[in-house]
Image (cartoon, rainbow, N blue to C red; front, side, top):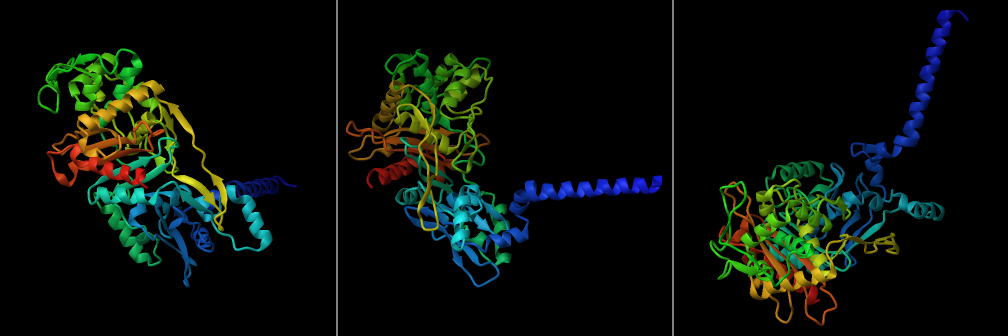
Length: 489
């Protein structure tokens, strides 16, 4: 063979090997990723050939597929669309699955999950039409409805947890939207709806309960500071601590003031119990200086700050900044400076206090069910961390009871039920009205084995009540209605 032919043969062999390797890679390693691409029209069309699994709350579908007579054999519908929009998310031919359970558990709902391998084999052998698995949620419909109604037309979020298991009983974010507008087979209308939702400056597609722009927590963070103080051994609930009308901050000409514009009580020395009941900034700022920023960061992390959680939707981690100086530590101790949280994280703090200091991993899925609603898998409660000792947790719970009975949280009182709570008014700066917060646990009655619910409420910009209001007036009544829906079932 002469040299030119030999070189041509080598080139042809190399090209053949490259083609073989490329095709093998596509067939065996990239096939699933390529098939899952939202712009793969063939794959998307194929997904509409099988019935998508339902999303269930209390056994009732809040997302289901109905048969059609057009090119797409099934259309996704949402019977209570706006009530559950941030829980379900959307399933759209044009924009894919996203925003909630639809996106987080797409493989289960579509039937393509590896977890359903043996069921697919069974369907093939039996000749049954394949269908996606259904997902039963932990949401309790009466609690979700109470949260939705109580929040009304105000922007913000409400989360309710079962402290004993981490089950999410309610998750509401406002403003909301109708997922059916994105799942429709009228594609021009879907495109218009998508553009409108994304152009809306109030961000209705964002689930404020677990993500988006995180909130400054304000005084609800004082629960974390209280936990750090009691755990340090340098404080107890009864010993008196400094609570001046103004706290001078190191290296700063601007003092830390109290919302009362003076002393929190009739004295500049108060107990930690009184400090929490009156939400005394100067007392907690002093604790922050004495303990230091690292102690606040460490305590917050034990409650779940910084954790990468999925419920199964991804939760944006809450944060307390590291490397704070003394002035910044004082501000962080009252939930200001650069402390940022999700409402879910605030609910987790209260839930841990209610659960003897144990933080349970929050979850939204109770079980996965087959097309005949037989149980394929169940979520088992999982401990995430131990935030504080049971003794410290009990102390804080009783302090929270004092906040509702004798302090700033009076609007969360429920007749015949002992409630613990904490108000918050979170400054935003830029001359914006502060966010109104409330977090609570109930019941705390001696006869109750353990509190059944932990709630966190945030109402943006003070809500519809206006600028001169705080957590007790705006957010506490919302938390009260949610707690009542759980307790008085």
